[in-house]
Structures are given as C-alpha cells and as structure tokens.
Amino acid sequence: MTEVSTTFWDNGGVILTNGWDRRSRQCAVETFHLDFADFEDRHELMLNAFECGKASLNEYLQRTVFYRDRPFSIDDFKRFMFEQSQPLAEGLEFLGELARTRRYMMAALNNESLEINEYRIRTFRLREYFSAFFSSCYLGVRKPDRGIYSLALKITQREPGECVLIDDRGLNLECAREMGMHTIRFVNVAQLRGELAQLGIGTDRSQRS
Figure 1: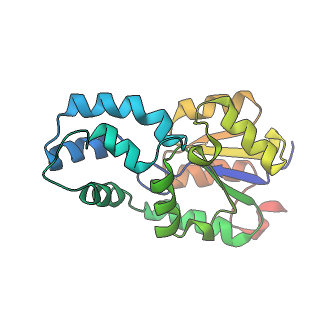
Figure 2: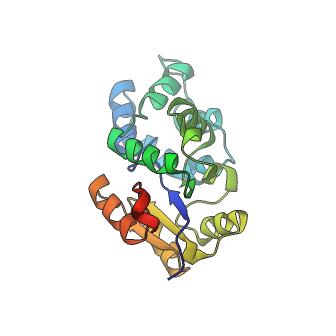
C-alpha cells in the first residue's frame, strides 16, 4: 500500500465549530429578530458566491440582512458572526500533536467565506498546524465539487493514494474516495486516532516503523 503522507482536514465540526451553519443562522434570527424564511432564502441564493470568494462579507450582508434599515449595525452583526467560531479542544489538541511530529504534510480543505476563514485562521492560530489552506474562498470551488480535491492534489503534487481527507460530512468524502483518496468520516477524536493509525499515521514514533 502507498504510504500516506498527507492529511487534508475539514475545520468545522472537526477542530472548530462551524463558522456560519444553520444553527448559527437560527441564533442570529432570534438575536436580531429577523424573518427566518426570508433570511434563509437570501442566504441560499448568496451562499455559493460567498463561500467561493466572489462576494465579500459586506456584500453578503447587504443582500441577506441590510437590504432594509435595521436597528443594529453591520459591525454588530459581523461581531456576532465571528463569535460563532469556537475551538473544539480535543480535536485541536490532537491536530497539534500530529503537526508537532513534522512527519506529515498537513493542510486544511474546507468550505468557508474569506473573512470568516481568515478570522478563524488568525484567532485559532491554524498556521501553527497547517502548511497550506485549500479553502473554497481561495480556490473558487466548494466541496463536494470534484474540482476542489483535484486542485488540492495538483498544488501539493500528491497522488490520491498518498492522501487522507478527514471530514464530518459523508457527502464531502464521496468524490475524494472515488478519486482514490483515503477518507475518514470524523465522529470523535478516539475514532479518528484509530482510523489514522490504520493508515500508519500517528503521534507515536513507532507508528512508522
């Protein structure tokens, strides 16, 4: 079996909470007294452009929230959005353990809008763990589109069999698996640790022997 040397990590649901998911949007609706159906409809229409880097955060909010006068400011709403991002401590700790071995290439492969993505990278010091960020806002394509996995492989100059993709959503893993990448659907850190060990990836120095 080809040695697995490269790990691609989803962020939301694995090492961090999701940046702007349905739960966060529901909370925003309740906090800012928005009409949920209207907001969700506008969000869905803007989502692809927002997460593919074609619409800025300001443009997204102009179309989804501030198309009419509001009793709160755009800065208030942005602050709320950023606060939705929280660390998943156990996942981050394990990620750090693997990164410190310096035995594997470690990269993020995630769907995220530009401003939220860069806030998360900066706030949670993700540069300390990842050497590359294959984010939808940089590549202009989102999971589960085959193109995002193809670009990640081309840029890293890796063969699919050398790579494993870790994600908490099964749909995001299907294309990667069909292309020949190893895939792990994240449930918890103990399960992830065990499945990575089966691929020869771990923090124990004897893992590669």
